[in-house]
Image (cartoon, rainbow, N blue to C red; front, side):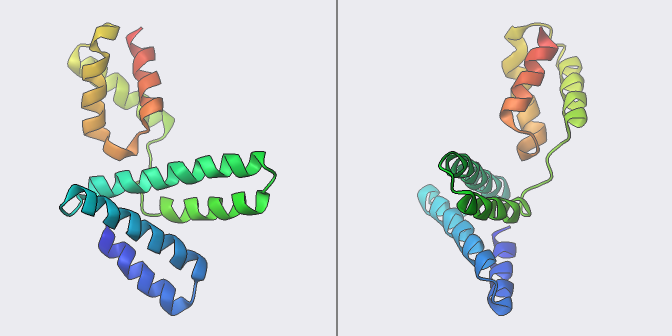
Length: 145
Protein backbone atom coordinates (compact mmCIF):
# COMPACT_ATOMS: atom_id res chain seq x y z
CA UNK A 1 0.00 0.00 0.00
CA UNK A 2 2.83 2.38 0.79
CA UNK A 3 4.23 1.64 -2.67
CA UNK A 4 0.94 2.77 -4.20
CA UNK A 5 1.02 5.99 -2.21
CA UNK A 6 4.59 6.60 -3.41
CA UNK A 7 3.54 6.04 -7.04
CA UNK A 8 0.65 8.44 -6.57
CA UNK A 9 3.00 11.05 -5.12
CA UNK A 10 5.08 10.88 -8.29
CA UNK A 11 1.93 11.15 -10.42
CA UNK A 12 0.76 14.16 -8.40
CA UNK A 13 4.16 15.79 -8.84
CA UNK A 14 3.96 15.32 -12.60
CA UNK A 15 0.37 16.62 -12.68
CA UNK A 16 1.34 19.56 -10.43
CA UNK A 17 -1.63 18.76 -8.15
CA UNK A 18 -0.48 20.49 -4.97
CA UNK A 19 -3.54 19.58 -2.88
CA UNK A 20 -3.23 15.87 -3.66
CA UNK A 21 0.52 15.99 -3.18
CA UNK A 22 0.20 17.55 0.26
CA UNK A 23 -2.26 14.90 1.44
CA UNK A 24 -0.24 12.01 0.03
CA UNK A 25 2.98 13.28 1.57
CA UNK A 26 1.30 13.62 4.96
CA UNK A 27 -0.03 10.05 4.66
CA UNK A 28 3.37 8.68 3.74
CA UNK A 29 4.92 10.61 6.60
CA UNK A 30 2.38 9.25 9.10
CA UNK A 31 2.98 5.69 7.90
CA UNK A 32 6.75 6.09 8.07
CA UNK A 33 6.48 7.59 11.55
CA UNK A 34 4.51 4.55 12.74
CA UNK A 35 7.07 2.23 11.13
CA UNK A 36 9.86 4.00 12.99
CA UNK A 37 7.87 3.80 16.23
CA UNK A 38 7.34 0.07 15.70
CA UNK A 39 10.89 -0.55 14.57
CA UNK A 40 9.90 -2.61 11.51
CA UNK A 41 7.92 -2.18 8.32
CA UNK A 42 4.16 -2.01 8.75
CA UNK A 43 1.79 -4.64 7.43
CA UNK A 44 -1.07 -3.59 5.17
CA UNK A 45 -3.46 -3.90 8.11
CA UNK A 46 -1.30 -1.55 10.16
CA UNK A 47 -1.09 0.93 7.27
CA UNK A 48 -4.88 0.82 7.01
CA UNK A 49 -5.09 1.53 10.72
CA UNK A 50 -2.85 4.58 10.29
CA UNK A 51 -4.99 5.81 7.40
CA UNK A 52 -8.16 5.33 9.44
CA UNK A 53 -6.70 7.40 12.26
CA UNK A 54 -5.84 10.12 9.73
CA UNK A 55 -9.46 10.11 8.54
CA UNK A 56 -10.75 10.21 12.10
CA UNK A 57 -8.58 13.20 13.02
CA UNK A 58 -9.68 15.08 9.91
CA UNK A 59 -13.33 14.39 10.66
CA UNK A 60 -12.84 15.82 14.14
CA UNK A 61 -11.19 18.88 12.58
CA UNK A 62 -14.15 19.29 10.21
CA UNK A 63 -16.54 19.39 13.17
CA UNK A 64 -14.41 21.98 14.95
CA UNK A 65 -14.09 24.12 11.83
CA UNK A 66 -17.86 24.01 11.29
CA UNK A 67 -18.46 25.08 14.91
CA UNK A 68 -15.98 27.90 14.46
CA UNK A 69 -17.62 29.09 11.27
CA UNK A 70 -14.65 28.18 9.07
CA UNK A 71 -16.46 26.37 6.27
CA UNK A 72 -13.56 26.94 3.87
CA UNK A 73 -11.20 24.94 6.08
CA UNK A 74 -13.86 22.29 6.70
CA UNK A 75 -14.30 21.82 2.95
CA UNK A 76 -10.54 21.43 2.52
CA UNK A 77 -10.50 18.74 5.22
CA UNK A 78 -13.44 17.00 3.52
CA UNK A 79 -11.48 16.87 0.26
CA UNK A 80 -8.55 15.36 2.14
CA UNK A 81 -10.81 12.73 3.72
CA UNK A 82 -12.08 11.79 0.25
CA UNK A 83 -8.51 11.34 -0.97
CA UNK A 84 -7.54 9.17 2.01
CA UNK A 85 -10.65 7.02 1.67
CA UNK A 86 -9.47 5.99 -1.80
CA UNK A 87 -6.77 3.93 -0.10
CA UNK A 88 -9.06 2.31 2.45
CA UNK A 89 -11.01 -0.88 1.77
CA UNK A 90 -14.69 -0.32 1.08
CA UNK A 91 -16.66 -0.56 4.31
CA UNK A 92 -19.47 -3.06 4.65
CA UNK A 93 -23.03 -1.81 4.31
CA UNK A 94 -25.38 -1.93 7.29
CA UNK A 95 -27.16 -4.98 5.86
CA UNK A 96 -23.87 -6.81 5.29
CA UNK A 97 -22.77 -5.98 8.84
CA UNK A 98 -26.02 -7.29 10.30
CA UNK A 99 -25.68 -10.50 8.30
CA UNK A 100 -22.07 -10.98 9.47
CA UNK A 101 -23.05 -10.37 13.10
CA UNK A 102 -25.99 -12.80 12.91
CA UNK A 103 -23.79 -15.46 11.28
CA UNK A 104 -21.04 -15.09 13.87
CA UNK A 105 -23.49 -15.19 16.80
CA UNK A 106 -24.95 -18.40 15.37
CA UNK A 107 -21.53 -19.87 14.63
CA UNK A 108 -20.24 -19.24 18.15
CA UNK A 109 -23.58 -20.20 19.77
CA UNK A 110 -23.53 -16.90 21.63
CA UNK A 111 -26.60 -16.30 23.73
CA UNK A 112 -25.82 -13.65 26.34
CA UNK A 113 -23.81 -10.50 26.91
CA UNK A 114 -21.08 -12.66 28.47
CA UNK A 115 -20.30 -13.84 24.94
CA UNK A 116 -19.91 -10.34 23.52
CA UNK A 117 -16.11 -10.29 23.85
CA UNK A 118 -15.62 -13.52 21.94
CA UNK A 119 -18.07 -12.46 19.21
CA UNK A 120 -16.39 -9.06 18.83
CA UNK A 121 -12.92 -10.64 18.65
CA UNK A 122 -14.03 -13.09 15.98
CA UNK A 123 -15.77 -10.38 13.95
CA UNK A 124 -12.82 -8.00 14.15
CA UNK A 125 -10.52 -10.80 13.04
CA UNK A 126 -12.80 -11.73 10.15
CA UNK A 127 -13.83 -8.25 8.98
CA UNK A 128 -10.70 -6.30 9.88
CA UNK A 129 -10.89 -2.68 8.84
CA UNK A 130 -14.05 -3.05 6.77
CA UNK A 131 -16.23 -2.56 9.87
CA UNK A 132 -16.22 0.31 12.33
CA UNK A 133 -15.90 -0.78 15.95
CA UNK A 134 -18.79 1.31 17.32
CA UNK A 135 -21.26 0.09 14.72
CA UNK A 136 -20.12 -3.48 15.19
CA UNK A 137 -20.42 -3.23 18.96
CA UNK A 138 -23.96 -1.87 18.86
CA UNK A 139 -25.06 -4.59 16.42
CA UNK A 140 -23.53 -7.34 18.55
CA UNK A 141 -25.09 -5.86 21.68
CA UNK A 142 -28.49 -5.81 19.97
CA UNK A 143 -28.14 -9.38 18.74
CA UNK A 144 -27.19 -10.71 22.18
CA UNK A 145 -29.94 -9.02 24.18
